[in-house]
Image 1 (tube, rainbow, N blue to C red):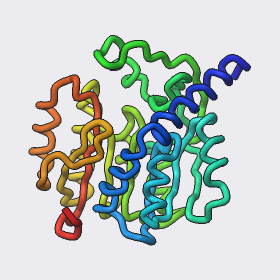
Image 2: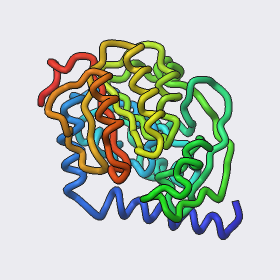
Image 3: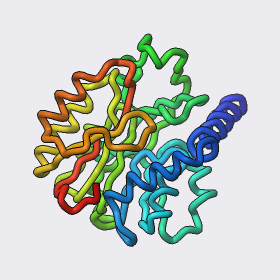
Image 4: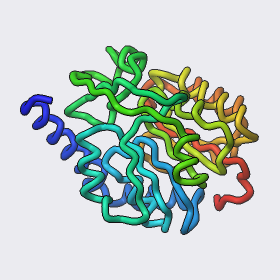
Length: 257
């Protein structure tokens, strides 16, 4: 990476730190309330697509151990600065998918939160409302592994959070046994990826579903839906809803609502 690109990457990470870690302290409290429904102190969590570590912090505040999965070089440097000495955090500098190997990662230097390994995601964003001005101007090749491989290395997690910009279904395809709870991001520019994620969850186990919209961090339905109901809801969302997270649980009766 050139010196100019490195400076742009550093500025992009600083921008993300301001947005996701500093600007809105109430956001941290909302995250803690949300994730407290799914995890207990001592639980192991996989944070797939850790970005600048805002959710790592949320899980740590809840007393969890965290495997932080993040392949972006500039963001990795920040995560290592923040957590390298924390015994509760293991940093995995890899991308996840449905197989082992390598992945070409497309970097959006001013906005690292939307780095992606999916050219289909980039094509879907082109010209879409709410995605104006996004440019993936740099590339890097990163190691690629699977959730199954992480389970072998670290143990079975109580919760898996997945936010990987268009490859959520591929990450879920790399999991061969259900976990108690998980979440994966959806976007209205790629509803097909979310629907594939729902199908994969249904194949893994008898999951029920709820969702959050944007950065609201509040479950929107007030009850647990089956896969068909969640698919219908995703299909009905207006394009301006933009994104959110599907939350899936095997046993809703074990959770506080």
